Length: 306
Image 1 (spheres, one colour):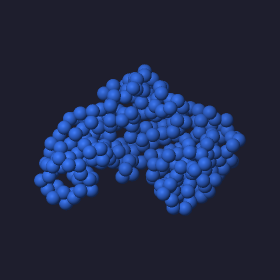
Image 2 (spheres, rainbow, N blue to C red; image 1 turned 135 degrees about the vertical axis):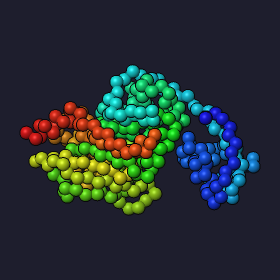
Image 3 (cartoon, one colour; image 1 turned 90 degrees about the vertical axis):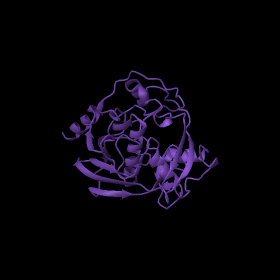
Image 4 (cartoon, helix red, strand yellow; image 1 turned 180 degrees about the horizontal axis):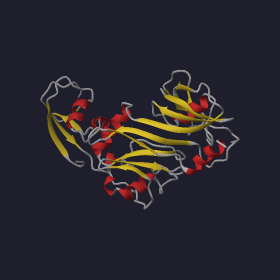
């Protein structure tokens, strides 16, 4: 589909242009269509248009789709712990220490490199350097991550994340016996002004912050620690780590938001994406996939349990 010029007539009186095009071109997301409009790749009567244009019906448009930019990513034969796979998506239990996609200092050995070896056809999906990636996990966070295998599945999954219908459950071991035992942390998150690689809660409403909510409940209490189940209602960078630190119960092993002197020796932070519920792109059936704690984290729980 990419690299083509399409001509189409829209019969969607009253709709916004970007909405009507998203329905007419299901292979593209609304965000992708809006970018094409900004780039002048969608013309009405030979002239550029705005995404907010209200249609009268019968408009004839020419849509120029850009060529897929070939990435320099190389497939790497890296073992993957696959928990579910079909023709549209793949769910992987990512180990701690693996970066999701290449970036400065992490040009190889990433999840994307491994996926390209497992699913060669995924290259170019979404037209980005992050083929098929719908969401991310921090480098030291283990657990479930879902990857789309075609453009239509990518759009389907992106819409679920946007509408917050995908449910994610994380397990975290925190410092102290958390009080109250269950609650929703509702605190906006933004980039820390002093340390750009760090996020922080910004108490006053600001253009620098975005709403963020994390629901948690206690699973086990130990003398000086709590194992909690966390369900983020929004998807901000480092959200669970920032929120738990903000309420005074930082995650064990977190070198950025946790205690300066850790009481449990861990080479990573104790945060694991344990469960993911989503609607399968092929038939909209709801599936729940789970991943148990990795041995290094389970050993900590076993030791605390005595």
